[in-house]
Amino acid sequence: MSHKKFSWMTLSFVLVLVLALTACGGGVAETEDVEPADVTEATEAPEATEAPLAEGDQVEVFSWWTGGGEAAGLEAMIEVFAVEYPDIEFVNAAVAGGAGTNARAVLATRLQAGDPPDSWQGHAGQELIGTYVAANQLEPLNFLYEQEGWLEVMPETLIPLISQDGNIYSVPVNIHRANVLWYNPAILEANGIAVPTTLDEWFAAMDVLQGTDVIPLALGEQWTVMHLYETVMLASLGPDAYNGLWDGTTAWDSAEVLAALEDFERILAYTNADSSSLTWQDAAQLVVNGDAAFNVMGDWAEGYFRELGMEPNVDYGWAAVPGTGGTFQFLSDSFVLPVSAPHRDASIAWLTTAGSRAGQEAFNPVKGSICARTDCDPALFGVYLQSAMDDWASNIVVGSLTHGVVANDSWKVEIDNALGVFLAERNIEGFQAALTAACSSSGPCP
Ligand code: GAL
Image (tube, rainbow, N blue to C red; front, side, top):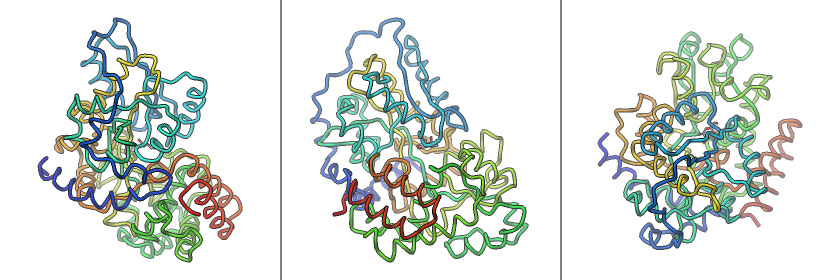
């Protein structure tokens, strides 16, 4: 796909996403009137100093990319940084644990103690705006967008999700897809199973495998259960009603939400009993090892499969989670400039690399994501990521819950607690009541 076509297609679905996401409660709505034109004028933050960086300067960058293709992606971007800023030592402060579950707890403690790293990984959307920006922990970056010409190359889709009151607060490095069904092609073929496209087809496919040696659906620790939950909610409700969960227009106590929760409960019956002790990598690996037929995971799993030496369309196949075809449930990793960054200029240098074409072209093909920038060379990417680029440019785009787009931290924590109780007790009415209460206390519901 040519860059030009990509940009035009990107522009054409901006409206769809803005309609889908800007009315969101808990904060996305507050960002809806941000116009890129205002954005460059809004900030009064001081610019990077012109003085050369001092020798021995360093930048401490915090993330949760410690393995599984993610660390390799980060390393590739660090290499670009090292060439561009040879005088700055890169201090990798990554904390292990998928979806940042551990890292974000460590970060919160550090922020509370007034000890921020120079930059950290955060998700575009409510995690950023409704959490860090709401707590006045970040400096606006409009000056850097202006200096680097990023408003020309970052998708307009993303700008409202990282902005508040005309200020832009992060540098997105990628676009990930959450609603991906990974499958083992040999297992499907041996059992006469076609790749399912609807929830009913998926249930029927997994019925064939239930009771055999093959796990129908590999699952990991609790955040991966929330990840599965959000994709099944999307499948069952469809994109409009799914979006309505986050702006208060879909009632959490409605019959359609109950039906979606029942679908989710039904799916859980096909999963491995030891899920709570498995990381996302463990669960994904069950598919490529031939122990499980399916796994639902974001496309960082593809970076992991490739790191394991697996071949696309041979060792693993992919499709939209059944029932979500035509919808791209997205998230975006982005880096921030904290207020009182210990090494502010070095942090700006890191952000400059993170937002650059060279940085993103090095990082994303390895990480298993597509560039946030619209001008990366598609030829650098493998067959899965090229298909993700096409879908990102043509699908309806909705946001992820587990990865920070649609709900701020307090709402997400309440949903996670409700999920934990449900997993222990399997009381679906109680689950629905707790989700309804969470929307009232932390979301836009009355
Ligand atoms: C997400 C993050 C991805 C990947 C994943 C698994 O929250 O956005 O980049 O790291 O967690 O750890």
